[in-house]
Image (cartoon, rainbow over all chains, first blue to last red; front, side, top):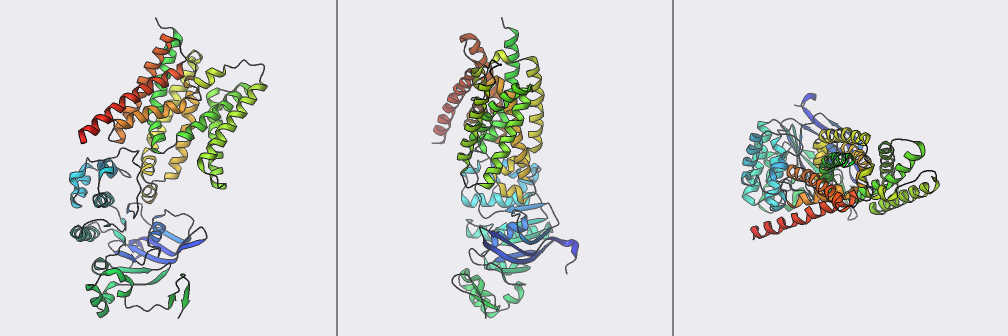
Length: 248
Length: 267
């Protein structure tokens, strides 16, 4: 299924250390055209760090990253914009690439925020801003989309619609997506490959095997807080409360 | 009615305003006003070296300011001192070194006031050439790096992730800052250059809702400040630099009225 030229980005045993502390280590994964790879894991497990390694934001990394495209769209988890800048949604859409007006309108319409086009970015609500961030990332028709908790702060119905949109974009643009999500439903229905992180790769595989699982079905009705447990996977190690790894 | 020196000063001032307008916007956006101050203070050392070795003043100032910028970047990497402390350290020590060197150059008569606050009488035809060609190059380069520089000003990680190379843009921008100080030192003086960068841009912020408008208004504000400032300095026999900055201040105060109105409209 994988031929070399459909690979967009490949992490080989990659890791990143900050102030002598590993944020994440030993991650190997591949994002291919038209495929969605989802990272799951608890807070502080290195999901965002892994995304930033894949994007080339972190420079002094262990292991290696092979990136085969420069057409990248990124929705960061946290974004701090300085309001000393007078910036409208329209200006923000043109931030990294000069995009045609029609493409801007189309993307803003898809994410349901076309009416905010000439609003100042500082006046948007959290959910509105999130929709603008997604619109900006998809409007440039990227080959690789990296979405770090893309629907945070979006209302529930909007959340479903946005995930459907993301899935559709992956199909129509044939772009590869690296997704970080807490939404179990999305992980199980839209994803081609799941990587479970906890400072390193705990396990990874196709969500289909997991979805057949009875444990998954019972858990799905409940809140998706215990994301890790939906996998019927066997860890070969446990984590102590200090985060140390112990082999079973 | 106008003497040649005044016409030269006008042409020089307008050329400088064209460049400080857009550059000043980035100084405000990226919070670099003290960085600008530091480079300007180091310019005195550049001027004294120019006299000592009979170099062109603009060139000498450009070299020293770029050097100070490089030293700053190195110190930031290698020490744990906060940025503002490092800026203060470099600004005042380079100013002090410059003043001490002046003390040794007893064979040259310095117009220190002119150096600190600008002197329209000092502008020569050669200076005009430097200001306008230098200014054109600065604007051209700024236009070339606009996209990565602006994108990384908004958000560094987005710019980096989407392949715009923000670090290179930042390094080039630092050199442009040194260059604008080099070409405007004679006109505005080293203590007031930062004012020329910040005040028109701050005025423009008050009346703009997009980055392009802010750059445009900043340029217009700078041009108006030069015109108003130079004519009043002729009228009241005041020094050119402070008069230009005062004119910019007046424009800034006027722009505050606009803020009040727009707040009223919102309510």
